[in-house]
Length: 78
Figure 1 (tube, rainbow, N blue to C red):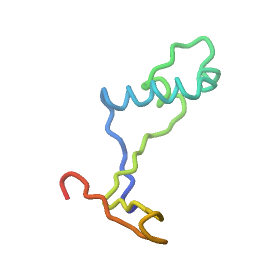
Figure 2: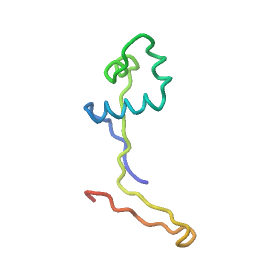
Figure 3: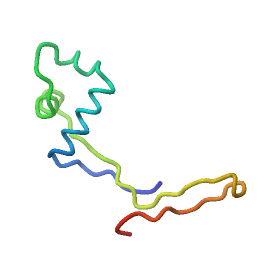
Figure 4: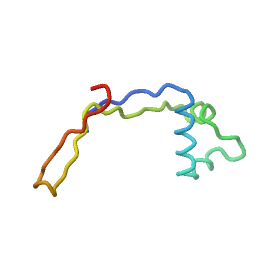
């Protein structure tokens, strides 16, 4: 993959991704014992920002088609 890392704007998609992250890694809740855990509180308390990888090019490696056979996957908008 080739791409870039961008700061993620806050909004419904970011909040949903954070909820899925907490569901997968429930120990994050331990850092906020007794407090309601939401994205705004997490960001304020941890003094962090969220980033996302945005792919520009993606290659699929298929060794069944020949050793090292790479095919580029076309991404929407490219």
